[in-house]
Image (cartoon, rainbow, N blue to C red; front, side, top):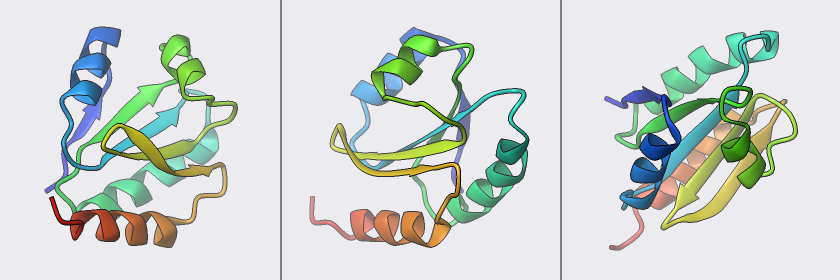
Length: 110
């Protein structure tokens, strides 16, 4: 089962991001984003098949993190592997593409 982590501090983000050996999913949202409210349950459903953590980040609460990752619209989903961004989906999310990428990363030799 995939844990969704709701980001609460910059320090928490740094710790999660720096100590991640497998793929990491960042989900950027805001409290006023209506599209986000329909996208997030679909992301949670997709992530049930993976052990990778999903970090839910409020872009308004953490503008520095959003800025570092060039988030200009929400929802935006980023997939990182070995500290590098390997997939970016914004606004109109292609969940099949996210699923394929996570499946590929899951089978990568370590």
